[in-house]
Length: 219
View 1 (cartoon, helix red, strand yellow):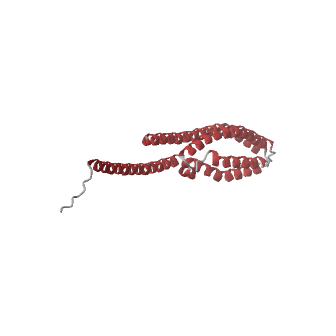
View 2 (cartoon, rainbow, N blue to C red):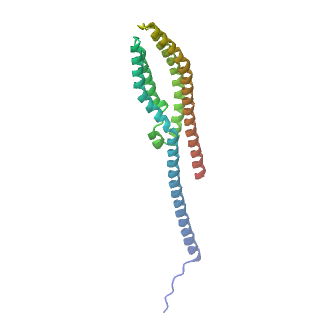
């Protein structure tokens, strides 16, 4: 007596074939998503490295402020002491410049940690906020700087130098210094301000481009 092998119905075989194709398709989709995620991670890392390179000069500038500040303080104190003038302007300068440098740590510098660890949208908000803070800082510091320069000049004029000729030389030197120093200072500050704002704008644009690419890839 022959044993008949049960035949798989044609519809069942087709169903199994469809399931295999579906599983294979799902596996391919999963692999594609994994590759896309890896590609996104690599692209994000490269972008942040580029952003760090573009903004690193801001951190170097802030660091240089803390290096130059004690040297300027020493120079002002030595100069005022040499002409028998009050060193109070030098002390006030140190305080104001120190506060300004400390504020620059937040309003001017873009830290490495912020660039590499902040979510892009949060980093974008930080960069926009930082631009606004710089404007406020500039508006506050500009009149204070002018007031200090006038006070510093008055202190020099009020100093009773032992040698009248020396006093005349100092006065002439002060006015010549103002005539040269003020325009140069304004130019330098303006360049730094606009370059800093431009750096933030470039970083914001890169973030916007990256977000657009990401949205395009997931569609």
